[in-house]
Amino acid sequence: MNKIIIGSSEHKLCDVTENWIVHHVHERHEHGQAVCAQIILKTSSIDMVLSTPQCARGFVGGRHPNHKEEEILHLWHRANLNDPHWKVEHLISFVKQVKHHVCR
Image (cartoon, rainbow, N blue to C red; front, side, top):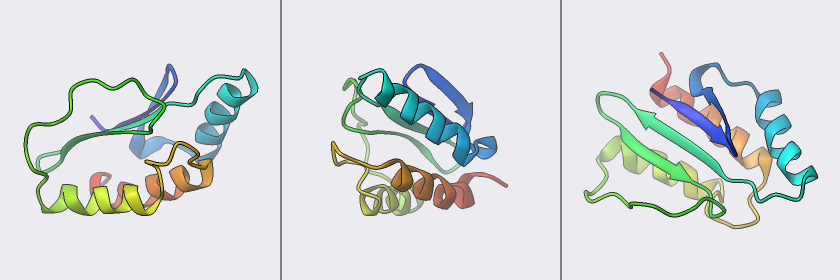
């Protein structure tokens, strides 16, 4: 299942809208909370969890990413989502791009 999680709210990645993302990011900002955003991708050729720096750190993968996963990691880094001060516009852009890899 491919999904996006912002704080404690989650949504199917392939069905998520810009408005949903903006609402949940801004809601957490308005309450003075750190905004943890995670993207979970699971397909026949992709198995990864991407998290912004505000998320609690758990287990980090034990294998090298395959070619498709490398492409997605490149998009994540290019969107500056590893920066503690990432912007909602960058998350939206990343989601739009990654949908081409996992939503058919």
